[in-house]
Structure formats: structure tokens, C-alpha cells
Length: 277
Ligand code: HEC
Ligand code: HEC
Image (cartoon, rainbow, N blue to C red; front, top):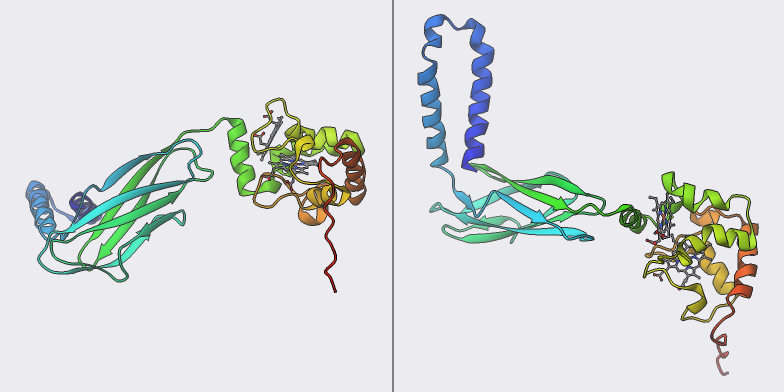
């Protein structure tokens, strides 16, 4: 904080000195060293007024694979002998949220307060930093979190993309494997080209069920529903056009016909008794 204030003020001084430079005469230039000494004095004088002291201005966070949030704690001490009110806490992006103890945030003399910073990591890989500016009437403290997120392999990345939008499989590059092979196909051919890629993959993912072993009764209605709408909140996309999928009604009907024959229900259909009158 001290450093930032110092750098900040020196910078602006340097800039204004520089822009004035052509107008300065030679004798004035020789005063340069004195001016700089004066500035250094001024800035340390400045920091004497600092009222907030942080446990650290920069923190590092190393995310584990698949982690969706980085949570980092900062602690701040009011080192002055007057209460301080924090007027603004401004994160550098929407993906960063700072949780403060109270609103308005008032820190008594000598008091230590926490500030919890949460950074959303979805679809972010590699190293990056986020800042949070904490402003009082007298000072601006810039806090930095440096985050590193291990880069997943291509399959892991695809999954993250699909978790944020399960229809993504039909868009952009994904379509070359997950959509194009289905064009113009029906029935078993269609199943082989667009369903088996996930459901009968040699290295089938643990969240993708074996359609022959479903734990629910299956009938044509079930298949049709699963195909048309998919399963919101999972990686199973919707395949019908009205729900953002690529398949026509006829294609869906042909699939339903194929699936009911290929995967007969393992359970008797549940009949719902009509209410007694
Ligand atoms: C080169 C062909 C290809 C491309 C391109 C492709 N996928 Fe896949 N995808 C597959 C295969 C094959 C599987 C079956 C699992 C395996 O063998 O990796 C699969 C499986 C999946 C799964 C099921 C979960 C899993 O890990 O098995 C999801 C979700 C998925 N892909 C989403 C996507 C998304 C989203 C994109 C585009 C960002 C995409 N895929 C691009 C071939 C591809
Ligand atoms: C991108 C990979 C992917 C593709 C392609 C895919 N599925 Fe799925 N499917 C899943 C996942 C993941 C689930 C598990 C959802 C869950 O968590 O319950 C699932 C679940 C299902 C279920 C069970 C639904 C339930 O209510 O339990 C059915 C039925 C199904 N898929 C049929 C199909 C058919 C038919 C196709 C081809 C038209 C298909 N899937 C294509 C990933 C895929």
C-alpha cells in the first residue's frame, strides 16, 4: 500500500515534470536531484498517514484441477487511533467478489478485520491476476491475487465447456465430431454417429451412463423425452431443434424406434393407479 501510493504519486510528478521539461532552463534542471530527494521525502511523509495495514498486498493461489473457485483471505489492521470507514471495495472484474464484514465497513482503531475474496475459475487456465481496490477517504489500497490454474487436457477442456453450456457440443469445432456425422442419418446409423460417441466410448466417462443399464423404466415416451430435452444441469444435451439441438422430428422418431428395440426396459413400466373415487 505504501509502495503503491509512493509509486502512484511519484509517477504523476514525473509525468508533469517531463511535460514541463522544454520550458525549464538549465539552472533549474540542476535542481533535479533536490527535487527527487524532496519527492522521496514527501512520499515517505505521505505513508506516515497510512491507516490500514494488510497482512499482505499480494497473495498467491494455486488451484487444483477442476476447482471452480479460488477463495483467498486478506486481513487488514487499522493502525491509526481513529475509526476508519472503507468507502469502496472495487474488484477488477465481475468474476471477483470481495466479502467484507459489514456495510458500511467500519474498522475501529487497532482492530483486525478479514476480507474474503472469491475468484471464479471456470474456463480460465494458466496464470493470471485479479486486483481489488479498497478505498478510504485518505488512501487507496490495491490488493492482488495471483492465480495459477493447471491446464486440463483437451477432453477435460471440452467437459468444462459442456458444463457451462451443454448444447456446446453442436457448435464451433465440437460440431465436427458431435454433429456433422449425424447429418442425413436416421435410426441405428444416427445412434452410432451421435449417441454412441459418448454412451459407448471405449473410455466412457463415469458421468455418462450405459444405456443398457439405466436405473429407470424405459419406454418410447422416456426415450423421446430424453432425446428432445436432454437433461438440464448435466452434460446430456437436448437434441430436438426447439430445444437447441440439431435433429428433425423424423430423425428423433427413428431414434426412438431404434432405442426401444435395442434397449428394452429392465423394469416393468410403472402404472399410476387412478385415484379412488
Ligand atoms: C475430434 C473429435 C471431437 C471433438 C472436436 C470434440 N469431441 Fe467431445 N468427445 C469425442 C469423443 C470421441 C468422446 C468420447 C470420450 C473419449 O473417447 O474421449 C467425446 C466425449 C465428450 C463428452 C462426454 C464426456 C467425456 O469426457 O467423455 C462431452 C461432454 C464432450 N465430448 C463435449 C465436447 C465439446 C464441448 C467439444 C467442443 C469444445 C467437443 N466435445 C469436441 C470427440 C470429440
Ligand atoms: C456429449 C455426450 C453425450 C451425448 C452425445 C449423448 N449423451 Fe446421453 N447422456 C450424457 C450424459 C453425461 C448423461 C447423464 C446425465 C446425468 O447426469 O444424469 C446422459 C444421459 C442419457 C440418458 C438418461 C437420461 C435420464 O433421465 O437418466 C439417456 C436416455 C440418454 N443419455 C440418451 C442419449 C441418446 C439417445 C443420445 C443420442 C441422441 C445421447 N444420449 C447422446 C451424455 C451424452
